[in-house]
Length: 463
Image (cartoon, rainbow, N blue to C red; front, side, top):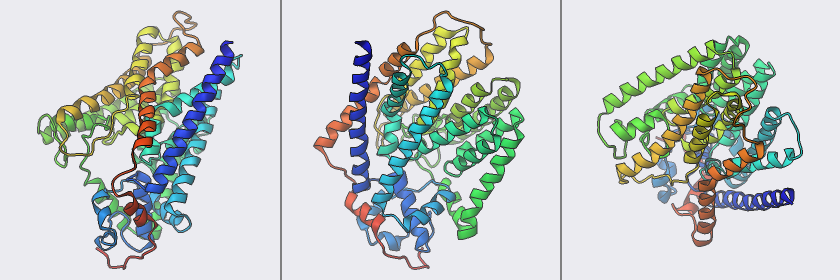
């Protein structure tokens, strides 16, 4: 009876998620809201039109005047937009978006299955059901859903992280270096793993990461010259939204509290010099912590996990939609806690951080939004990430207890608690379904999609 109920619940949830994700993908592909993939696609189109990939020409935008207010800088590294320039020649934006998202979700599910199988080797009576529940929990998690809604690449990054972690466990250091090098050329903050490999004396992974990273970086350099990197550097120095409520990093927290020179939003105080100096101190302190702990501690899994969470915590842009790449870190901490001497306390903190990170706050783009709202919501995500990181640190500093059997929760009960923690995400997805039936996308969607699908070429001397 219990098995049938669980099976029915999982089937019903799967069908609901299939509908919601499918509707969201086709909606975004058809209307083309401002997404990371849209901006990268437009950058690829600009490169194919012999124009700067990081500078949307006024001549090009003049053909679509209503779009101009929607264009924000594209922060994807040169390798990403060079790859997009190749794809843009063969696929329309709609075809590309649908293909990319379905592929990303599929690869992510395969990676999650591999991670679960590698973590839980004991295949008991409910093994397949708990595996399905684990995958559904990952898809219900609101930052995962936001990856589709905002056209992000974190699902691909999560798959790269999982396969690189499994490669390291199997001593396949060159493969791990290759996968992380690819991740760096999609989002540069993965460079922190150079510190991890160096501290662990995993030199094959270290040099593999450097070599492949340089090879990937040389591709756009060879095709488009130094101008593409100059444009990328200018874009990175013109970011004006560090303190928005979705930035869960230390720099986001400091920008909301003390302000930042290029920050467009209200902050509690305005001490940008102090904000940056404190951030630099925190950044290098965490780098030192990663190196010290990774070198001294023999537990490669927990130190890998710590590197992941620290990466988002000290990155200037630690967006909440990057949280799915912490799934590997969550599983590592989750299983390691079973031998912790502070099992109850750390388990409660871990679940609480999951609950906080699952709250579906909207992303505020309006510069007039009150600082109290930004600080309150942004700091909830910051606290969630900081708590998760702290649990990881405490596990590494306090030795595990062998054969600890006190207060160990069953796998089924753990998954039940996880679904309880994800209840805010369920509310968020339910609200999305309701909005689908009541509204249509805004922000001049037809103009944006027309811009992406336009075949007009730019003159080579565009500004």
